[in-house]
Image 1: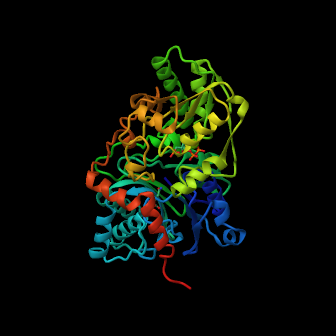
Image 2: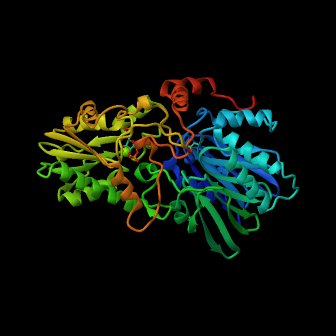
Image 3: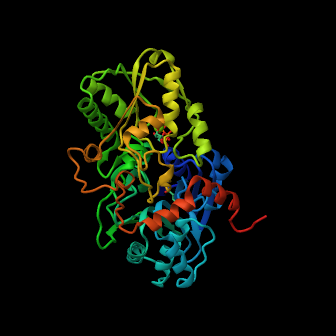
Length: 501
Ligand SMILES: O=P(O)(O)OC[C@H]1O[C@H](OP(=O)(O)OP(=O)(O)O)[C@H](O)[C@@H]1O
Ligand SMILES: NC(=O)CC[C@H](N)C(=O)O
Ligand SMILES: [Mg+2]
């Protein structure tokens, strides 16, 4: 997951883009970038780091123009090099910049086609640069000096024909407008909205509705699977379905962990979905052990709080904040490399002993992925004097890699891969471990009102909605992107941008 944003405004958009990226920071902590356009020229600033570190006042002053896009990155392809920070740029046709959330699964084939048939050069190993070149090529071959929505939507339709995987995209066509589009399975999220100003209506496209809220935009809606929105630089909005056989299968892990709880995705309140996850989990606990001896329910901050609160309510057990989080340390799971992740858990969370001493505690997390967090947390609970340490996860066991924009490429790094619940409990040192059942998670997310036919639940059930993932593919990405390989790739591609000394 990454965060994307685009704005067509009536005055300078630099501050609004910066603010939106700050709101989306939970989606990526590795790199950030903004590009704006003014009088046919582009102004770009991107680098590794958090939004607040990448943009200094001098950069902001140079990001002039009423239209722009931004990105925050959590790499799932290529390396962590600043050369792969987004937005990416191609000069032909028109000067196009692009920001992408997701991951392409046929990137090797596309890279070959781009070079051999489209005669284009890609300078990094980022799938997003490949995606940009496919889009640019499909616009270029239409040969129009001034592209209209017809050419833009035709190019998006061609992208859908050629690209596989998960992608939510914003792209800016210099001097003409902003386009947003979503893959034909709607795996990754993207919404658009508007705000009224004295100068007229401004439009914004973003990964999550919370970015619209905070900037005073009202949500128009989510993009449908395969749909594109095109907003011209003078503020005319067009939308069109560009896929032949679109199907809604959003990534359910957005609801479990990735998204902010005050966002709405495909009509579902993430907050309410998490409350329902807590409710369902309480039902399961009561089914498994109606006579349980849990004294207190304690969440593992931050993401699990909402589910834990409702779980405690439903069980009729006290809810207590047993861990204090250092607010200056980011999300552990999206850190690059296991060493950093492991070190961060202890630095980030500290136990309040009196909530543990002599008690049977039920610790709640939203998910257990590599097991980095829960192993250390359980040990901390014991050191704080807990009598028994139970653990539950608001999501089912994560057993399979993700290939659509979450960096979980290696099955062997997942603690529950090929292991039973009892085996995981033993490994993490829990006296009792409860995982949510998948049908309950789906019910919790779909909720009583919204009709979503299917979700991408691949990390839980190994079924990949795009239908192009086989063992050979999984083996390849496992080899290329396990923690050890990534460390090597990052070392050799520290500078892979055009040489510029
Ligand atoms: O099993 P693991 O590999 O440790 O991954 C799962 C943990 O990582 C995430 O927390 P994170 O610290 O990233 O963010 P949060 O503060 O939003 O909970 C998630 O909420 C779990 O706590
Ligand atoms: N997490 C993401 O969405 C990553 C986008 C893209 N695949 C990259 O690695 O930059
Ligand atoms: Mg967490």
